[in-house]
Length: 171
Image (cartoon, rainbow, N blue to C red; front, side):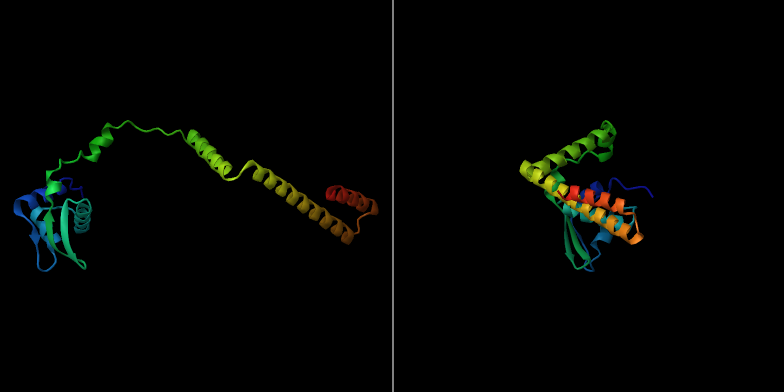
């Protein structure tokens, strides 16, 4: 089903010429839909009416889920119609995005923000902390290898080499 692109204009014109749409049973939206000859779905029309109400083109009297009155606003009627979005899109030049350049800019901005939040002294301290943590894990790994070697009955000269390495790491 094709989209009805003139419905807003027809609704504004109808409300200007015929006045407000009133329905004591709360079906003013349905009455207006039939009055302007809207050919889309009822849900689409309800969405259109809600959008026009948000935009200030019309005013609705709603209680619960029922719409009892729809009136046109004079301010919206006096403003010129907007240029259809389709003509704007057709006249705009296609946008080409250089994703590599965009990624570099995002990464650069990330590092600038990170640097602004962490002074250089903190980054040096953090690097030293990471080095110490790395050395601690390396020492634990070597100790685990030494214990595993003892369990498997490795030769004594391998153990002495491992002990020398452990001493060098712990210094």
